[in-house]
Figure 1 (cartoon, helix red, strand yellow):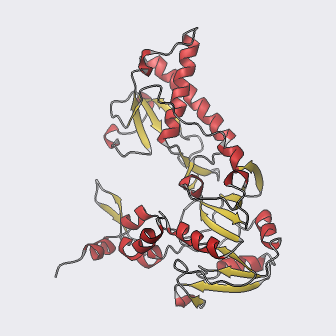
Figure 2 (tube, helix red, strand yellow):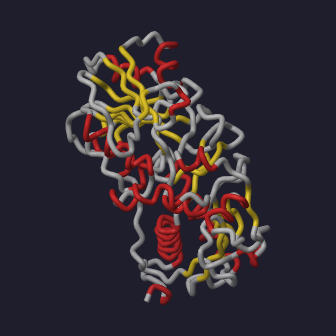
Figure 3 (cartoon, rainbow, N blue to C red):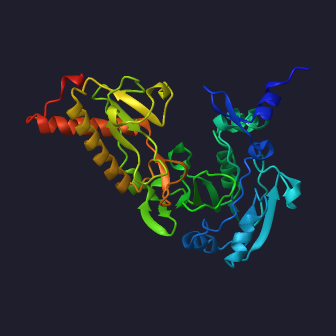
Length: 367
């Protein structure tokens, strides 16, 4: 009997290496429902608690209640409202409802929830795209948490959602965002997805005015942080993912705090050049006619790393996409996107050009 592609995928698990045809076993029921449970209380910071209590609302609503951990966290912090829980799975004892389709309306309710997470590309890799594709198609969203947020925000004036921190760079509209809190401590035991807590209110003040926290630490507004973003001008020819490139870029933090994202001469890189593909995003080699000597490349790498560190400090790392897991010092691992990397390299080249050419004329490589 022929085995369907879906059955084959479920039998093998999730594809983690195309080249090696390697799969890992996954729980398909958990994945297709995007169900990852919040077992810790670190998400419930003092300012999130204040937002909840000062809303003036009296009913807690969790449209994706799961095992009820959100309600348990609120009770442990002695925040006692009437509780209304819903879940697509009847085993948890809450009212059965598919809240990705419709979120029930409770008068004087505030949503406090950990919605399902499942990106469209992950659904394909994990072999569950057929079961959830209707949500992506009908809404135009790229992740189930975005579909869930849409439904919650359509129905309620106040929403507290524990969602992937990637929402910052996702393009998802955050006009009603009041605050965003990065949670670096582990509140999940079944996923290493980097999370944040977003508090949404009834007013469309714009994302730039939203307050940003890291745990209990206030960092400023999202607008202030994002004002430091850098964009490339394409003034210089830079080719990424070139196996013959003279400059190496490790674009993701390792778990070792002493080995962060960084630029270096290719000779100093221990990475196997055969691993560089057109689609590589974590480690790459870069070529450019601007790179004229080993000493000059090392100087550009040094300058780029100084600029990178300044950018990380000025933005509290938040413009850099979070990467799964934390470093050994407890801080979140980050990934440098190639667009920002290009902008940093352009500035490093321009700075060195200015230092070596008194009148600041650009090299021929910018043509």
